[in-house]
Length: 258
Image (cartoon, rainbow, N blue to C red; front, side, top):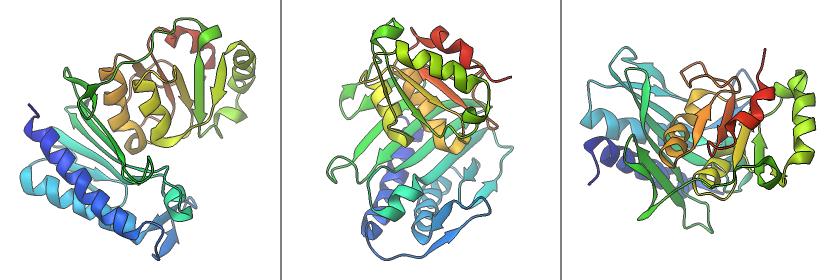
């Protein structure tokens, strides 16, 4: 049975998906933030739809959204929301984007919903997890792979601009020939695949917490390990990721950033 938190998060994700689907591959205004990343009226509309659902049910909770910012951020419960993670894909009309909703309680991530509304031939894909209750794709409980050697491992990477400027880039280059396969699925997709046992590790170096918060809970509840590249905990200031099936986490220790 779903908790009231998960029920609300799923309803909020669906409200955002309804906004997104109506606009997908349509006409909408695109503007650019200070960091040159795009934002559309659809991002804003989807976040407002999420916020309306969550605040109507939990008015005392805090909210931290990609587009509308922070409110009541000192509350014990804090919702972390990216209404369209992958706006560049959305703008260009391909379906590798998702709605990300997570709940943090006193600094600990306890719930995650990741909904790719236009993925999978337009049928969409939604994965959700709560602490201690597993990660789920519909009625299917997800589990990370049992791969325990680098020689059999598949690594997916994304957002590596910062890593490429460090000595750890050479270390990644040394590791790559030892792997069974390397891919760059990016965004929500490689975390969904990691939680579902379809790949074994993910490395990223240029993220923010709103991109990954929901996925942290999903990967962990599927049996994986999710840290920053130094092996440290995930928090509001996290910018790097090392996510694995757990069995391979130590194999990537040389990628730690100074």
